[in-house]
Image 1: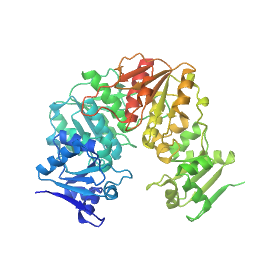
Image 2: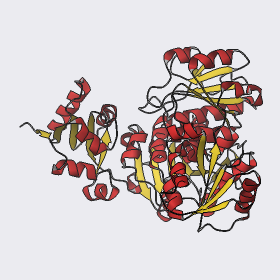
Image 3: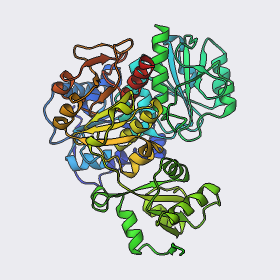
Image 4: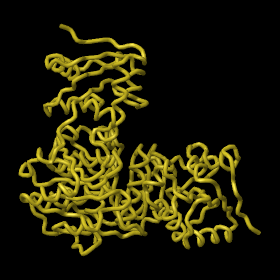
Length: 267
Length: 267
């Protein structure tokens, strides 16, 4: 059986479905999300994730990794679609679209799926609103060997096209959980774990602070930072030098500077 | 003389001019750029920068800082405009517009305007394409006490609305220069300065590396990184741990992790 289909025309129902995945409500309804680019899809495959639908532009270059991907998807019972580049561009919403995209089943993001003993570092973001920052935190987590990213309260959707893109594949390698603070804190206190936040209140210098594994690094909302009660619930509050006019860093940057410091301390 | 004017209607030529500043070619032609929000405009004022035109939404809250700003702009011969919030939203292109925006004269970005002895750290970005990353680097530069950001080759425009927004005011406090590599390198070598890049080639660990002041931290393009010859022209190549699948960090994140390390080393 050959499941490869050629799709033509913007009004094709499959194209409409794929395009709809750029919106959160349609992603949630379908339980699916989009990722694009051969590099990303190959990273996903090597992490054990195959797309349910593989979409290829008709003008794609021949590439052995793409052939492997195609045969793996077909062998797993998935679908392979081929379409004109401008049609694919409509789906991914990018001017210079990659020649390949995939539709993946969303993962389980329950806190109970997190195995805290699997890594020394975990990133935690509270009310992070920018999908680019969220994807960047996933990417940083991959780099420092973190176990994953725990999203507290109302964060951007980790399965949005922008977050997946900014994660550079880390959405497939990092565990992702979503929880309310009132559920996260009892879960955290139910096992080992040090909660650390960058803070200006009652804090110690971030270099040389007594970090302990597993270390949960908590970063707050882009404009409001962390609520005071959240900071006060932390085991350790650390402060980074601020030499200029501003009193804060970009959320993803603050998380990264702290994560690299914790990595050095725990090694 | 009262120079405050009430503007009504999208077709007003002033509104058209202000909106046009969201596009680079119009910014260059006018030599002006837009910044929004009372916090940002106040930071600018305290850094000695007043807008040529101050725009206020008619539904703004009364605020002493806004009154100060208004009287300073009028005293300096500037213009103050008042308009409906939806009109201001059209100008800044933001769904939830700030109640105030300013039109500023673009700064001199010649390399010759940089005083390298003014700071121990300088950030340098090559072909950085994302205005959010660029603004984030300015913000990080402010935080680490850098002198400014030097933009090499074809970078995003530091005066774009997105870059100004992401800089959180640092566009007004950091020096900004734009240069080609073939002009930057002779300029750098014409004085003191260590050029450092994050690299995988012939590099030493970034922690404990022999950083020297003034230290110029070079970050490359988001997808291609630095050209090999640029890396090879550096005095020091350092590498950061990469524990996961990926071999790189987000450009602004890499610059920040490195900048905080250099700050600690040079203090």
